[in-house]
Length: 164
Length: 376
Image (cartoon, rainbow over all chains, first blue to last red; front, top):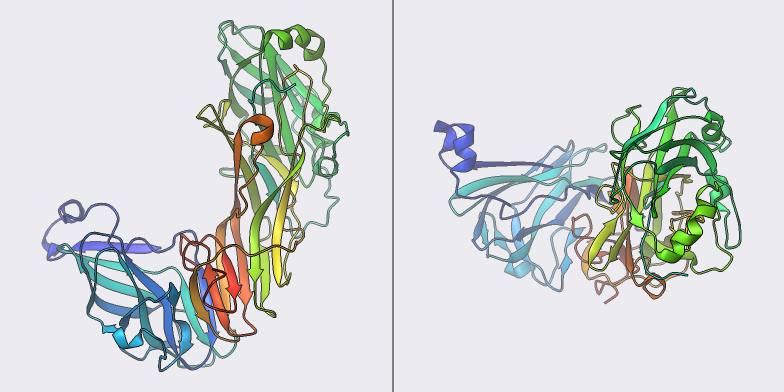
């Protein structure tokens, strides 16, 4: 798991001050990606809805997700905006058909979007396989909360494959 | 016989997963006689000097695995020392053959027995023999330094103390007491479940991976956990066991099980120590009801969910010997290398975590479920 945190406008100050002066000590609002439970979700297809990830705001502050990138995957491409979709009945969309047909899809918010305190949301976007020998990808989520900005990279990887 | 609950020793039974091993590993040569095997200090008693501290090698795992109530087995004496007035002791290897004959796949389980002045304690640890002669810990840095074991002694009761002189000198091990106070206890660890017919589940381990089962003990609200946090303070704990590869298993309802037996050991007193005599992990499946799993992710036909895990999970209540000892035990287990659990969806369904979404830190286990009700 890799995680970065930096202060807005922090380039002019030293690293120690960057960390200490952010005012956002301790656990990041969206937490640390699963450090001991890495893995891979593989689903056959061409373009699928990637709704495997959750964003859990465990803080008392509103989180603003500013951008989401698909990284580290060869032959994998994000082909839609990212959306925050409410979770119904503790069930995630997962790797699913695109376009999405899901009860809460109509309530989606397009990134940039906010996550209320103590709320978990389902991150969803279209993931397209662009060749026959793709490699798995993961997500980088950039967000801000309480005057600090954060970058979170998930350890769990997702692959849209010809065959799993 | 059990007037009070006390000791759980050798709490980590380490399962050596040697996929490439075809049993009958050659017995390596061992350190030369006279080399230091264990050193440390005693604590917990007022008169430190003259306590007999003996190091035994347990029988090889194939022997231990087959023990059942009523069986007796002899540990082999490796060396003996007597503590100094300050409580320091150093055990040198007097009988190297005791080690070599106790090795299985290079893994040797040791027990330290210390007794004197109406106090006693026992502690287990494991070493792996590498490069022909050296003994190193199973985990962590491959140091050949002697085992450091600082032992906290427990006081014998009056009745025990009366008995002890006759038994302290005996090097016997009486395992699997015929009285059967405990007998084998099974803990369910690491479950793979599916309510969807056709979902295949695989549990596989890397070559040379090891797994452990540790027993945490709480007595009178004091945590007694084996190892450095335990009443007997040492730097590591463990016992070794060959652990076969399990892969390609498939069942509608399946749950791997580990089996642990708790038996009386020696003889020092009417009180006794217990330790798991065997852990059989992932060797077989049993039909069982899937646990409650409420956090689900949709899975399409043809999907695979790979879960790399450094921890496997206990869905049962662990080992509960409360009725016997008046104590509660909990089991956890971990892998030194990653184990991988794979669910292959040959039909559309859901992957449901027991207390979190799959592949999240809070997800303890996964049930392949036909619905998003997740066995609710």
